Image (tube, rainbow, N blue to C red; front, side):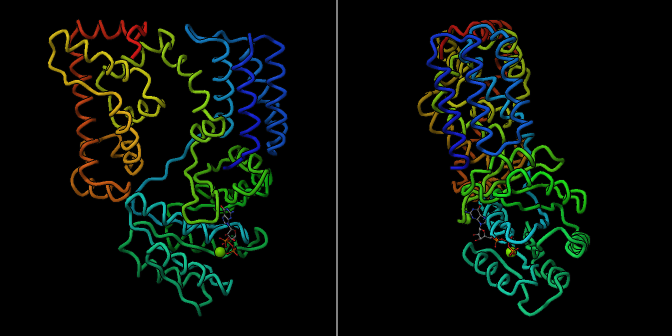
Length: 447
Ligand SMILES: Nc1nc2c(ncn2[C@@H]2O[C@H](COP(=O)(O)OP(=O)(O)OP(=O)(O)O)[C@@H](O)[C@H]2O)c(=O)[nH]1
Ligand SMILES: [Mg+2]
């Protein structure tokens, strides 16, 4: 697990809040001290730590918890939100045909990560290929070839050729029928002119869509200035921080990079080809804090959202804007809480009212929801926003990418369409709409 030490300390702190008889100024002050200590130990920049904890303290003391949320739950929520905020926004990598250039200093993990990325795209149902653009280090060709073979991905390289540009050009032509062409390049000891020259040249002739900078997490806060320098020199589109499994300094690298203009897109969490994770700050922090464990606390908070928010969410759901993105948001609320569950919870009542809406078995649905999330991970943003375009070819690709059967993908689409229709039905029936809004506001159904 990445940043284990930090996670343990923060979990301990959250438990302290959960178990406190009441929340007062003293408790908040001691919690803030705990967080400071934990983050400094994880190498996060002092200034950032102070800014974060100051904001946590201010909000915890000033903000009143929304109706129905206890101050305990509210403080935990504030800590979560502020931690997510320092990690910056999530950058999405489109699942489309593209050329990706891997750059970085010597030994940072470029070649290994090129293989991991190929595996990532393969899992998503795309056809990636690897090109050995590192012509400097003698063993680089073999290393990448071995990785390519082990994951069954097409590979191009020329062990004897010294001109990287030449190899890359030929490789692109040779492998043009694949979707994601991932180019490994050679590292240097520092960001020198010849390295910049080579990357710029390769970037130009390949017209790469993405230029990923690979940084070893062990360099800690140094990651920030390095990312900025590379960004200025070659316009990187994303950063991948590697070796986060083996360093206590990971917090430094993560927070320092997120401060620069370059978004973190993936993190490397081990030597194995599967040890690559998409970097999504909310998910990352949820896991770090063990949100599953404290979910029981926050659950209540979610259920009794303040009236305005409930109304807003309900309106959105009922307005007909219900794409797979909204569906995933709903599924993501860990135990299927939130308005959608309440709407499901109302179904038997609707039936009681003589309506012909089919019953939904929540337990069975929970299992399905897990599967659905895996399937949705293999979809593109375009597909998520406009599920209508998902026809048989896409269904096959998504199934392949998520390790499911096409029938599972079809089932998801059916479920989505049913839900959408149901919501539409609600929104066009004024009486039902009114009843539903009332339920959502007051949470009486306890679905
Ligand atoms: N534990 C761990 N090790 C990693 C990770 N990523 C890479 N490594 C290891 O780091 C070492 C260097 O990785 P490479 O991929 O060869 O690095 P490189 O940037 O291509 O190196 P050069 O081509 O020599 O510049 C290898 O031993 C990898 O197994 C990671 O996320 N976790
Ligand atoms: Mg290499």
